Length: 398
Image 1 (cartoon, rainbow, N blue to C red):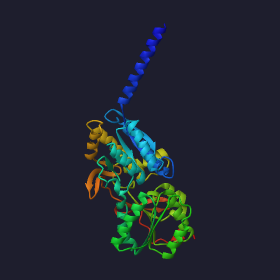
Image 2 (cartoon, rainbow, N blue to C red; image 1 turned 60 degrees about the vertical axis):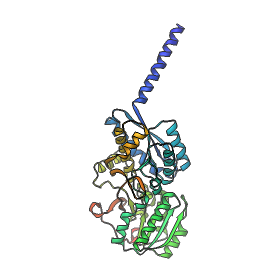
Image 3 (cartoon, rainbow, N blue to C red; image 1 turned 120 degrees about the vertical axis):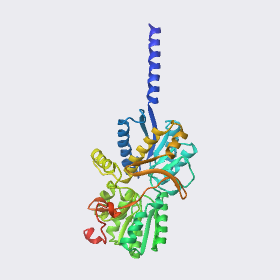
Image 4 (tube, one colour; image 1 turned 90 degrees about the vertical axis):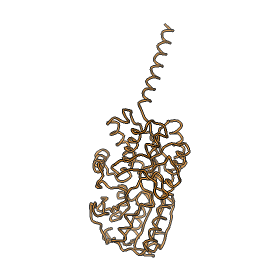
């Protein structure tokens, strides 16, 4: 009887191993790195929900040639050292075949370095610092445009509508903030705008009034800010309190497009414009459908960060379906051959200028009007007319 029990246990163990092996063989694992906790968690939240939404659809449609796609989510907390650590885990322990995600530029750059060192294909969907794709790394691909091009549409709008002469630039002292500010300063130089002040600040500040008072004294036409969500909201609330009234407040994307910006800043968000990389009314197949599905499932609007993540998931699925095998070199080859349409727009990785494996994507301008994020530029796709000039005192209820 004892011998029979041992035999039964052995049989069950073998069957368990066989089932586990079969299950693993029927699944393709991809690592996703996002800030799910910490100060950038709101960005990570909207991207995770969008990845999950796309994943559900992809697997319902047959997955990766019959295999289930599994996204192994890791929280980088918005810190480069944590990002490096979780990526090493994804590569060595979870045995993922490629990586996706990458929100903040600082973390994305750190993660990209680890991926390149390990020859792990990495599709970046949000990290925007130029050097992510100017470092000559051949295993790193980026869906979103580099931050040096974020203000392209803003530049045209300023020239045609605002008649700008003087500018102040405020930015977070991060890789994204510093590069975004420097790029816009170059734009101003080319356009002939005088930059009266370019000032950096540390993330998480609670009192921007000293620098805002200096800006009020300078009386610029434009205040351009490169900030994440909490700083963006606080900057506008305190600008309202100080009755700082330039011709226009402009956000360099990031914190100025999330729904939480309007929720946190309240009336101080109204009529603020921002660079953006996407809007649901753009003529990309499935763009409005994705927006509506997101709202229906999560009861809140989405914006360009979500569209990037949703589209990245579909690019990942397309790459894995086309790859000859799940070897890193075959996945890298399939990434290089990508040429597809997504809700974010066309995706094709090319080399242009110093950029390597960089998708070319347009930028747009949105404006907060009555608590809604409206597309105002270019005008042929606008959901509302650009509100300008702005009577800030009236807008703010003074």
